[in-house]
Length: 124
View 1: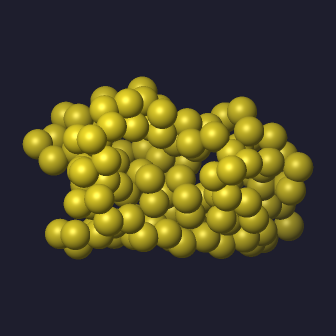
View 2: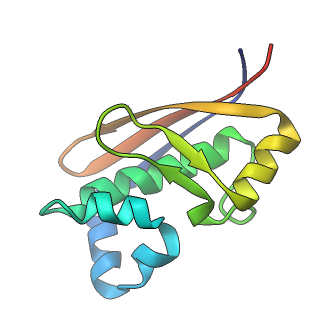
């Protein structure tokens, strides 16, 4: 395996909570059904959604692009155990174009912030 790119992002959990309260459709616009089901099982879904939001951003950065070229729901960060990345649509097309065959991600939280580091991997 070789590293094609790296990305990191930090999300403020309180800000995500505020956006969820003010704009209820935010969850549907930015997160897959699986991500929403996972996050909303917990008393404070904003903590998990902030981590997924940062994860999406980190994955996009690892592919050398940002959210203007990849739809938010085309990157999915799994929950429960070791996080994994699933890509669809625009994200899958970008990955194929630059030779990405997988990702490694690491998620960490504080009470206020969620940070994700992503590595886009390619063949030798």
